[in-house]
Image (cartoon, rainbow, N blue to C red):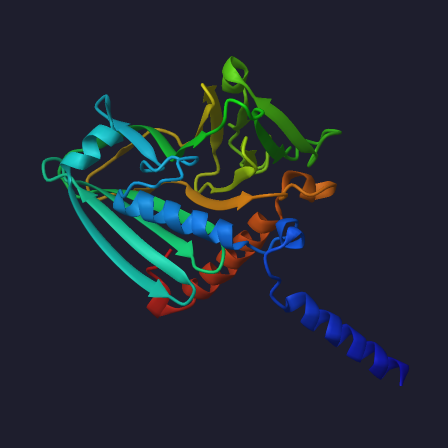
Length: 304
């Protein structure tokens, strides 16, 4: 009888835990998204994929990646290339694919991204494909090139992350750094051939207006590096990849980026919560499970 009572109690608690929670101060401290966070992600996603202006300018709406070819920036090159778009909805995700083609060199840039319709999260990866007859050198690849705007009356941007595993006394310990002016330029995460040696490949940027961005990096080559630059209440965040030359007929993939937009009290207290990683862990697990299923399904093997 006691066992049945215990089982019933646990079942009720599990049902209550799974039930949706309305917007409230409790929601703001959990991994459950608020309506405002969902709107932020929806409007930002629309801005970066369609080029439409977004009234809320706290998060930059230019293409959130960049590279350089022959000394020219991608922001200058891509508008002159042929662009094709496709869009589809699969379950609770909105998929977009943008392809830029340079008719002269044969270089193709493919950007595949998806927005989760039930979480304020956006994920993408992009490829370079050389369909021409000559090798192309691609430099200063930034799989994430994002600008955050703050307030002059607010405090500084704050970086939250976790140290990597270097057999030191501070292994896996949270780090917190204020990003101010020239000091911000000296702060670098990653930069080691082993992706989790110096720092774990994710971090949280706390903005000046109660908002922030969680960033997860999937580095197919192992190496990744994040740099920060603060000027006039604006913060530039760059996740850099290595330069490379792509031969005719070859493809090269950039790093995979996962963003979770948040606002309110998302930093928590103690342990991993001190850097606000619960929403990112939730989405990373979801992406990993989905990709595992996709790799075993012929119908979904071409999705990312």
